[in-house]
Length: 220
Length: 302
Image 1 (tube, each protein chain N blue to C red):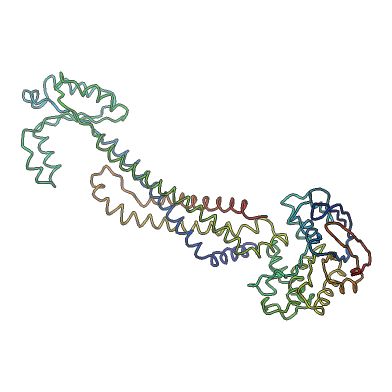
Image 2: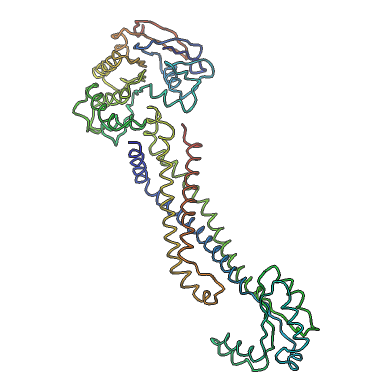
């Protein structure tokens, strides 16, 4: 798998690849281009020039009607969880399959499996406002991986969580990664990056300033 | 799954957006009702015109001096006039009405109006020749040819069409007014649909953003909004049809009873309303569907 993106002014003159099955951290100050990179991968934005590849998808050349297929291959997790407050935990996860037209039998089989996988057994019928932050993020992860995506994009998934809960969430992401899904996580959490010793891509002012195979957060 | 999911979404959407939905239903109902009323008037006018054309007559009044000499139109010039009219192309019948007959008819016509009837004095009404023409195109030809033939004893003439045309111009006016109001209302309905769809999409922006993120197709994301508008329009159309049926029963049947009596007018039948009904439904669906579709394309980002 390879990505190559260039866009101005949010991102410019950068080229890198992340292999299938990798766990990569994107670090850098706010506004350095991490979120723009995610938006480019999802084809929510298009680069002014350059090429973006995700597996078989030539992202910046995709036709509008092919975009859903691309997005079905990508799972997304955000700092603010983005759960539907009027649906239960199980319904939130099922929603992601319903809206892409998966059959009911599949949904009934897969949703309990994935909830157990992220550690939410017994909480299927809770409403989001009855959950802790960590639990909400687990629901979001379950929703993101329930369709077995190639890539999981996590945009500061621990930004709203305490250190202990953050570690638990990263554990879940790590397990997802070990199952074969590429994980790309944007973060400001130096402890997590240092503890994991995985690929680190550092952005600054729209440019790639560091690309380490087993990196740390950095000095200062 | 698909259908079940979309139906649930549509019903939830309509419930959450209840006030706008009701406003949309009422506006479409009135718009379509007015259009339907206009269509009924057109139908009535067309049918009435047919009846009228079958019965329309012209009448040539015979100079009293001629009638004095020849009360039964047996010799020239009256007989000559009669033969001439009978030989014209398109003329189906020529009837001579002598003075007695004219008096009797006048009494009948004003039977309900004793004051006027009293003033009709026997022997004062002129005799006449009534001419019925099968082909309306021939009407003017015949009329123009004989209306000024004083030499044949024509004193004056009456063109039935004048009266009927006046009635039809009233109907045309009613029709135009209904369509004008309906058009203005249609604009209001369209604006309301545009707003409702946008509000519906905004109310559910979280759902929509998640749907897009997990790769739902455009149709899947937007079909619920489109269907909400269409369902509202459908309900509006049904209300409009119900309204037309009520209008037929309580307005056309009752208030126009007098006019029906004249028998120039075709009645508005149940079949007429049923004929208009599918067009109202179709019109409502197309209006709402197209408006919602364009709104979603223009205002709601993919």
